[in-house]
Length: 208
Length: 245
Image 1: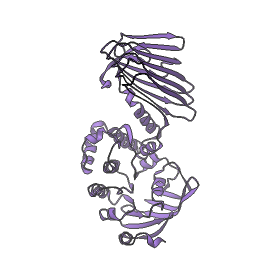
Image 2: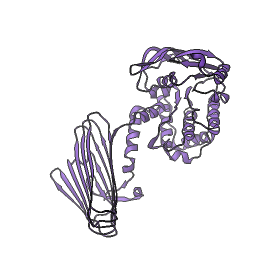
Image 3: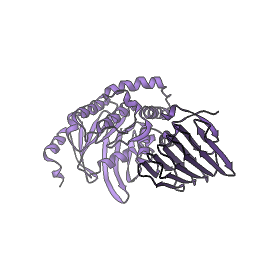
Image 4: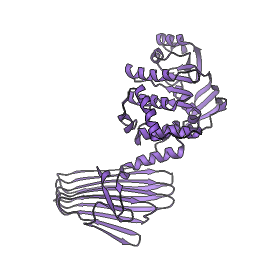
């Protein structure tokens, strides 16, 4: 379980269970995260983008150049007012027997806008690759916007890859159900948002 | 306790309720029966304050106060409870947390102090035994992956916990096997007392074998077309709703 892990704060909003093999570069409003996992390793990364980490653009590249590496990424972006974020992730599977797993969730209020590009590239030598990418978004206003584009580029034949994206509003039936039990609207709202992000927030984070 | 006067309601542009009149006094159990599409579920949703319905005429007086403009949570705080036909699955919301939040929200709106975790556990454990469920059930997400019977038991559990003054059960009996039906009936009978009103909405007479109503009404095309005692339910069981034609 990822939830029992202690993660280190690498930079605002970026947490990892290790400090080697990860490089974070900042350039104006853009943050570039480069991960190069070593052989037989497992790396866990958590991204939390909100008010406190308001870079405009995040570029996250993972290069699998060593066998048997696993990288598990969870990300959450919560934006309001006129905030924007642009997230680009690239899982570059160059060698075999590696695994990348990504769960990204977005909660967008007001007129916030998010752009998510998730690319998985499986090169010809990267047989036995397992790569999963999920991006789910919750829009809490009619003027919030999300543009999500998960893509797969697969050049090997013995791989297991999945990707998917959803964009939706808060479940009105669930909201009514909670309210009909006496839970006030604001709290019911918050319960459903918390439930949506729970998968991500399971991570236990400590600062270095 | 509850008085419905000339209630008209529509969904979008479609008139569903066309003048309902009904008075339920404390201590009484009423059953509303009717064919599909007669407005049974609309009536229960309008009483509970669900979005999507427009009350165009009439009023619903609950202890003398017209509640048609109140929020669902305000109605719950006044003591109204709706056991739903299709309880909603809410993945990620822990059942125990949900039950405790609901109870304490109602207590807060009533000006009562909240129960702490220990007091809540003591209370919920007693009710769990009444609906024949074990504690593991509290750790699951609200209704998520529950069987039909478990969902209905969860409704009854909530009803026992929240101790409403007036409970509406919307087709709680549909799709239940006899064991689950008995649990539901026992829960309702447990709640039955001189200070409480109960409205059973059902398609079939079966539930009424376990919960004996004081009055039975037949709803058809948005109106109550016939009222009587429990023998009316037996007549419907034997002859169907053909007499409505």
